[in-house]
Image (cartoon, rainbow, N blue to C red):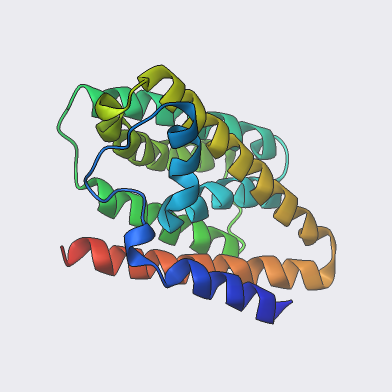
Length: 195
C-alpha cells in the first residue's frame, strides 16, 4: 500500500508545469473545464483533500464540505472573470494543499464552523484561478460546469479514500496520504513564492 501511495505521489510531484495555472487561457467548453482541475496536481490534491478531510470529520462535514467548496469556488470564478484584484492566488492554492493535507495527516478535528471557513477560503482562491481563464474559453458557462463537476467528483474520490478510516491500517494509510499531500503543498508553496 505505501509503495503505491509513494508511486502516485511521485508521479504527481514530477510535473511542475502540470499545475493548472500557467498563465494562459484554455480554449473550449465543458471538456476543457472538466479536465482543468484534473491536469494540475495542486487542484487535484486540494479537491481530493476536501472530500478526504470531510470523510475523516464525519457528519455533517462529510456532506457540507463538498457542497461549500464548489459553491464558493463558483463565486471566486466570477471574481476572477471580472478581474477583481486578489492576493497572490498561487500562494493561496499552495497553502490549501499544505493546510488540508496537514489537517488529514495530523487528524485535526475542527469544529463545523472552522472547517467550513477553511474550505471556503481556499475555494475562493481555486475559483479565482479558474475564473481568470474563463474569458478566453469558447463557452464560459460550459467551461464552468465542467470544472464544477470535476471538482465534485474529486471530492467524492476523497470521500472514497476516507472510507479506509474504518480499518486500523486504513487510518494509518489515510494519514500517510495526508502527509504526502502536505509535502506536495510545501513544494507548491516554495514554487509559488520563488516566482
